[in-house]
Every structure is written in C-alpha cells, then in structure tokens.
Length: 394
Figure 1: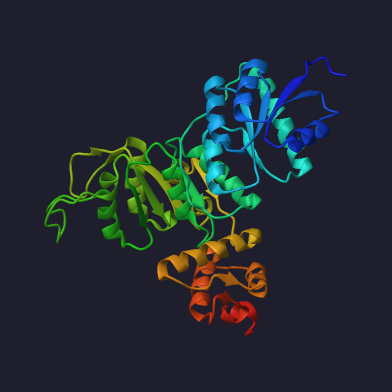
Figure 2 (figure 1 turned 180 degrees about the vertical axis):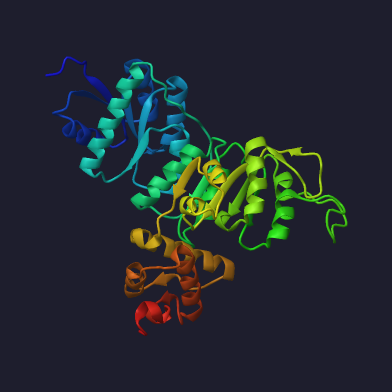
C-alpha cells in the first residue's frame, strides 16, 4: 500500500461502455475513476472534483470535445487532459495539442500503450501539484496532411506544439515526404496565419540571383538592377518564409541568412542601411545537415540556429497503412480538378500500392494515381493501370 492519496481520473465520454472499460482497466491501480457523459457535466466535475487528469473523447454526441477542452483550460489552466478519438486526422491532432492537451490516443485502445500514457499523465499531475509549470497555448485550424499511422500522429503532435510559438523549425525527410505541407500546417496554426506564407527553393536559383531574391537589392546594385527590389524577407514581413532545400544554399548566402536570424535585419544587395523584419523561418532539407556542418559544407553556426525544433518526416514505406487514405485523397483530388475520373480502386491494385517500397514517397504515389486515372478504362483503377515497375509488367 502507498501512503500517497489516491489520484483522480475523470472520464468524459458519451458511451457508458468506455466508462466501464476504464474502471476495469484501473481496478487494481491506486486511483479513483470518475465519469461524466457530456461536456457540461464534465466541466462541472472538473471544477468540483479537481481531478488529476481528464480523459475525454473528441466527439461527445452533438458536442465537440475540443470546445469542452477550451472551457476546461479556461476554468483550470493547468489541468492535464488526454483526448481520445476514433478519427486520427491531422486537424484533430494538431488542434488538440495546440489547445494544450497532454496527449491524445486513438480508439480502439492498445492497452499497454494506454496504461503507459496514463502513468505518465499521473506522474506529471504529481509534479504539477508541486508547483512545476506546464505551458499551454491555443489556436485554430489545421494543415491538410493525410495519414493516420502512429508515425504521422507523432508529427501532428509536434506541429501542434511548435506552431503557436515563433521558434525556427527544421523539417527533414526524404524527397517527396511532404515537408512543404508540414510548413504550411505550422503557418496555418500559428499567430502569423493571417500574414503571408512564402516558399523558395534554395536549390533552384543560382547563387547570384538567390541573394537578391531573398534580401532584395538597391537600384544600380549590379548590371540590370534598374530599380529597387524588395526581397522575400521584406515581402514576407510578419509572416512565414519556407526555405526548401536549405542544404543547397551557397555558403555566402548562408552568412547573410545567419545575420537575419541573429539580428532580425536584412541588408539589400548594394544597400547600406539594414531593414528590420519579423519573419518566422521554416527550413527543409533531405540532407543530413549535421554531417554537412561537420564536413564544412554547411555553416555550423547556421545549422544550430535553424535546428531549434526539428521534425523528421517518415518515408512512405515506413507508414504503409497510410497508403489507402492517400489513394482516396488523390483520386478525389483528380476528379475535382478534371471534372470526373475513376471512383474506385480494385483490391488487387490497392494491394500492389501498399506493398510497393515508394522511393519517391508521397509525391510518387500522387503521380502514380494521376497516371492510373488517365489509363483506367472505366470507373475503377486496376493493376493494369499502375506503372509496370510496381506490377512486374502485369
């Protein structure tokens, strides 16, 4: 027996079976399990009972659990809340984490993982009772990323945690994994969401032009500079600038970028007076920037400035369970853009796509679906419509 008082867990769910499941799950643990069937009762119990943790469904009949979460955070800003959902979309995941949820879990539950999550939450509650600080934040909207695998759920959590801050973010991952989508999601869920989001591919622009593109130039700064031009940083003042393929940025331009990150100022090419800007930087690369820095191919000081918060996107071959949802999304996208197209995919074709190793990741999958939609003779995509390298010349 322990001398510590029993901790309280409040379950807010409109399904009584869920209440019973938690009671059985925690029957041998040193906790008291409380239950509420709707948001209003749950909020009342939060204020009256002051539970150590709340476990709440995102869908409470006609109520939105995220709205209830907002009310709980207003009533008890330091309340630890775990959200439950059977619909693991990027929108719900990012929103829950932005609103300060401790974590969220998918239904149906994996019992070992759920018990571990509850233990961590109860431990955090004890630490909070000792006056440790838990920082929370709020916001709205989502990023439109597709995937419900556990690997992508972790990505959504990271986006939800970093988006409300102004931290510089480094997004890494293989080509075609969706790094720009992550950047869009961070911007859309940030306090800069009403300002500009601009993207630039550092590998696609020659060094001489990249400097002017980013920082602007004064009239007469070089041959052909017939007028003053504002660079992306000034154009994007107040917003978010996405620097794709940052690992390909020339060293000379890296030095000027470092100054912007350090001082919040840009100096146009040919200019003498620096201009203050407020721009959030999200950078992306498919290279190992740490290794590049050690090999003197990338500035080490800039690497540390960029790597404040990193998000590493998993390749599609590591989340094959997401292929079906991505296929559905890309087929729907094709039909909307072309006013028609296949509405189904055969089980054999889907099996081929799921088993494929996807060296080009999500981008390759979208291209494959576009090709299949063109080749499909009817309203169903079959193996014959897929690229031969996937089917072995089916």
